[in-house]
Image (cartoon, one colour):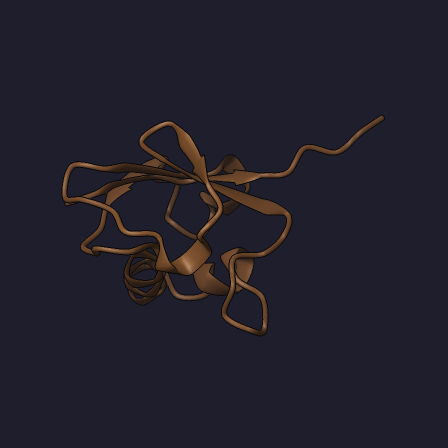
Length: 88
């Protein structure tokens, strides 16, 4: 199963879990499975159009991806949802 790293701000939705293993062969499937396991997490990751929020970057196996929800992953992938940093 892919390993999903949960950002600190969303760990309250995963009962404090920093890392979870979730079934899925794409980011869309992973987000859907995460929302089933941890209701409400999808709304923090996706916008109204069911796309990854612009303030969230997705990294698969240490590479930032730009193909959003359709990004394919393997059973041994590591997926990181990275909130944008702000400041000046």
